[in-house]
Length: 266
Image (cartoon, rainbow, N blue to C red):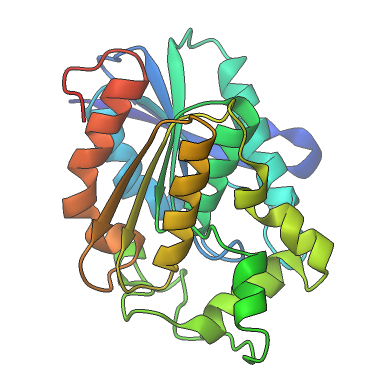
């Protein structure tokens, strides 16, 4: 399918934030907001061109926004930015019947934030869900930045593929939120689940960078509030787009079901 590509469209003039648009020749009437990962502090919209094109090939209009980065802009800046991107898309000229959010790693966290803020379906691959609980469990662990995990040099499927790295995970959380306990609690999506949240697809490897136990707790919290949730746990230690071949089919099925024109129900 032919896909037109509009680059560097300003969606937030106040913060000079831009997004890219992937427009399929034959649109299915629905939109996808693809939110890149990078621990809330690195990477940009260009990192998700591969993923965005996969959705566009299925007929979705796709936008990939940049958002403000830590530590210059800490929580809730990135959350506010992706909400702004959603509102921009919803208020645009595209006449979409529905919009979903997808994201990996920190992008998975922000996709969940959109499900909470706007009630839309969200897909989170290896989402960084656990914030305050993780900090309590690893209170005595020294945070250490992993300088080898450079999103400017590595493709997304090469980042964080070696399994858990709790010292680095702790560093990313502190870099994004800081160490104030109330702020950490506020940044944890687990404390803000309500019945108005959008349905979610949560995918994680069983032994990877983003803790699997947080996925299970989020699933339970969603169920307790009556929010539809689909969880897929993959064997091994691959993180986010490292397991794309296994996760993409589930993602397509989820979008088909929860954007309103399901052909297959899971």
